[in-house]
Image (cartoon, rainbow, N blue to C red; front, side, top):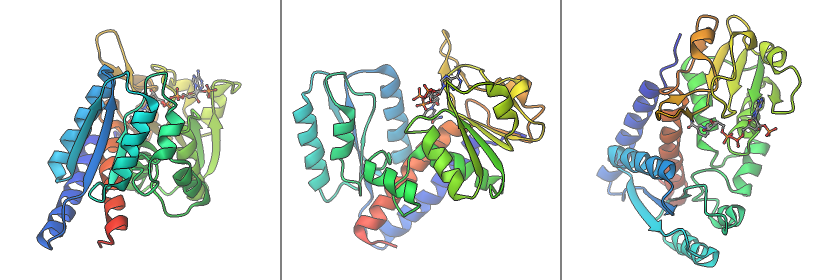
Amino acid sequence: MDINGKEIASHIKEGLKTQISEWRQKGYRAPKLAVVLVGHDSASEIYVRNKEKACTQIGIENLLIKKEADISEAELLGLIDELNEDDSVDGILVQLPLPGHIDEMKVIERISPLKDVDGFHPDNIARLFLNHEGLFPCTPKGVMTLLDEIHYGLAGKEVVVVGRSNNVGKPIAMLALHRNATVTIAHSKTQDLASVCRRADVLIVAVGQCELIGKDFVKPGAVVIDVGMNRDAKGKVHGDVHYEEVAPLASYITPVPGGVGPMTVAMLMKNTLEAYMRRNQVK
Ligand code: NDP
């Protein structure tokens, strides 16, 4: 059965919208998300537009700051300092990737952890690792929310995460571990990937290779979450999982598009609200 991420994300955003309008009625200001876009990468421009649209939909004020690709690292760090100090800004997101002359990690580390709605700051990563309260990366949070929506308890289950990026694979594995799953992280050096994947009660794939995971990788009845987004020559988006082969075997599967993707934006909105609530002590 498909897990309809688009519909779930839409319900979540409706809930956030209601929450914001209740705050507004009580006289609080709207939450505010600052998005910094450097250069003219077309994929980044699309992502930023989607975030802007979601903010407008639910009542978050969106401050889009566009800078040319030749901005110096020092100037960008200065901008982050200003946004950190601006009390009206609750969340700061610097759209990645940045041009090569800018050290991304330096920029991420400059963002106040309290405003780090992407959840990439080492302070928030440590909090995730320690299972403490913090702002956690949006896609991993979205994946866990999808599992909650199908009422899937992870305790004692075999979870295999394919992909070990800092933003997706590793945080997903950590969140699953905190829910008492037995977690395996596979990657490009894993031997016999198919047999490792076949162990999974829940198979989560975040690789970036079109339809890498076919029917031989999936245990019948497994839940399959496809994080991959791979654009073909015609601009059509495909997952890392071969949907037609795997869907008949899986108990649940996320389609691409319409699975994990919409959840990422919904979780960004949720993180912005969490940052707002914590900073302004709003309940
Ligand atoms: P990265 O390129 O940072 O990481 C890819 C991971 O996949 C690496 O750990 C790599 O292993 C592993 N890998 C690559 N090839 C293989 C292979 N043949 N077998 C097993 N493992 C392999 O990508 P991201 O984590 O950032 O993104 C992964 C995918 O998810 C992409 O398609 C991306 O577009 C998508 N994505 C989707 C989002 C959404 O909202 N739906 C959000 C973010 C990402 P190694 O470490 O050994 O190199």
